[in-house]
Length: 400
Image: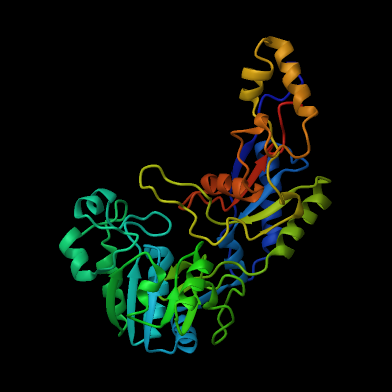
């Protein structure tokens, strides 16, 4: 390895930014923050660096908010305002509880159907060990609240300490609606209780809706069909509705950002104009990864990245260096091994899908991979780094 060769591959940097408010010129703020960080910290912007902007500051700059009253009005208009079956919500104070407030305010009765033993993203309602001990088949068995309590008692979330069954029931009643709670995993299990259904699952929502309509439900809306247009001057999201929303205040929700294609192109152009470098830009939300302790799959947003520049389309096309070293070049070492592997990389096919030499690499979308890296870098608390600069992601072993 010569003295001119780089010793570092991918670098991910959290970029501190001012607090973003509605109406701020986010493209200018992001560009300035990245370039000022580069100057202050002594690094250079390179071609194919990735500037990633968290969805929350995009939505905040857009002023994309709605209130629980707005949700109630939309639910009442779309689901009739009487008995509504609310099925498969995630267990989250930040993500769903405030949505449930608005939903309950828009109905006389809520029949809440919770999936078990966990919700869609892995929040555990009851342990599998307890399920096994009770002889319950979660795939087919429908449990009333009384049966659930008889079998499993009170189960508090490992991280929050909240009994979500009690919490959601009390929340519904506090909004003036009657509450009935059942537990099931088959969508059609709600139909003996209600025929106007709001299915609140995220990644399985299209299948759930299809099954319910085929089984005879009169009206079925998914969360992505609530708040798709302004209500009394509110924000909205035409594509995702309430999906990807977060609690802002006790009666206000920040929605997933609306069209930000112009924003990512604006940042890309500003950086090119000021540095001569062609960077890629993306908006990101939750990363797609699973917590090994709590078994929670973090992706509660409908997608990792809703908006990105064209250079981030596609999947990685990489060789597995360990495979080459242990198989094709197992008799080589030192400089000879390094050169042989480098030559394999230089000569690799444009599409390695199915190749043994690429096994064990990650065939996920670039935006999912980079967005997950950015989510881990920026965190969700008080780091104050809602922008992440990723450098060297598209480099390989041969790049100097």
